[in-house]
Amino acid sequence: MPFVRDTVTVFQREIAPTFRDPLGLLFTMMQPLLFLFLFGPLLSGNTDLGDAPWQWFVPGILIMMCLSGPMMAGYMLLVELIGGSMERMLVTPLSRTAMLIGRTLKEFVVLLAQSALIIGLSIPLGFRPNAAGVLAGLALLVIFGVGLGALSFVLAIASAPGGELFYGITQLVMFPLLLLSGVLLPVDAGPGWLQTAAALNPVTYVVNAERALFAGSFTDISLLYGLLAATAVAALGLTLGTRAMRRGI
Image (cartoon, rainbow, N blue to C red; front, side, top):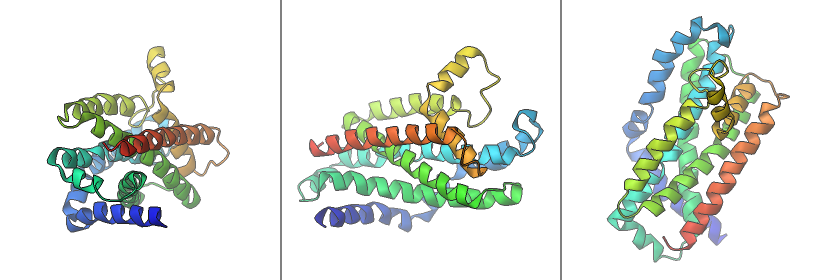
């Protein structure tokens, strides 16, 4: 019970600024919305995507939000580390693991809210999701997002007090992961070296699993690969993040 209480306390502390500044939450949605309304229609003439380009594109947009949101979650932790407010939390009896879990819970609650908005806005454009597949896809997104958020916290802790390492690595890693996962365009028609790089990218398997789930293809082998990739990222992130928090930052 103390651990649950500590987790809820940290979660409430982290989620409160989001409720006070809903415009900030909407501002973070600008890039996904621009891709949805300006880039998505351009795919209607792409014969490689078949007759349902929105079924292919919308799950990719959700993965894009997962990369740009939870992966940047460590920014706020870095601000607290630089400003000194995190030191005041460390002298409290709060569980270090609860500090990580509470922050991570906040990130995927925001991610779920943003995903629901994107799905709702894409339906009038022609997106026809499978209801059960959407729920399963959001669950997979949460697992993956939790891992990315925890890894972002680890990077923020390692970057303090300067912060240059955090900004450099996130920008260096995020865009290759995004482009090599086939979120925006299929990589099947690319050169061999590009397809090999995409096969080594764990985000590729999560993207393929999301597309299969949203289409209702529950027997597709890509679901297994996507679940393994998302679980591996989550396990790695939570393990390293908990260890970093317990060291007292």
